[in-house]
Image (cartoon, rainbow, N blue to C red):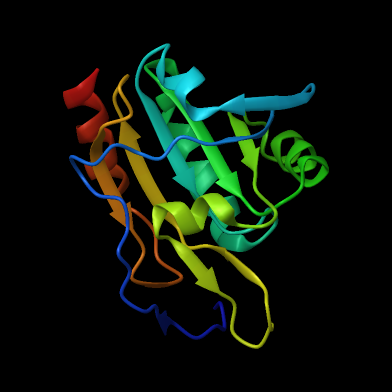
Length: 169
């Protein structure tokens, strides 16, 4: 049995369905290398599922990415993650999880703040990460589906996300 406390997260004014998702440029890491890339570059090629998650190695990150990997969503659209982890940590995480998805590195958590999904970590002054969140974006960066965690730990309804993907693509 896992021993942790469920924590209610404060209300957030996050990006939502119908909004244009903020564009950003950050290092985008895959299994081989990383380079600066923008979200608008990715959506120019079609729909994108943008997944905000806790730092690499935390059990919620492992659980979320195993589920996404097992559902093969990358076969129908671009799936990318974003966390505060460094490019080096992302490369290790991608290798360990045997992922074919790329991950944005945002150590200062600025993108999460722009999206309204930042989460100050209890007991760590000045340390924040993204709360779990999923945004399905069309090729104009319009948010077609949004889910943001209201407690920690919390996970998206994967069947609901998959239905939204199926409706869009």
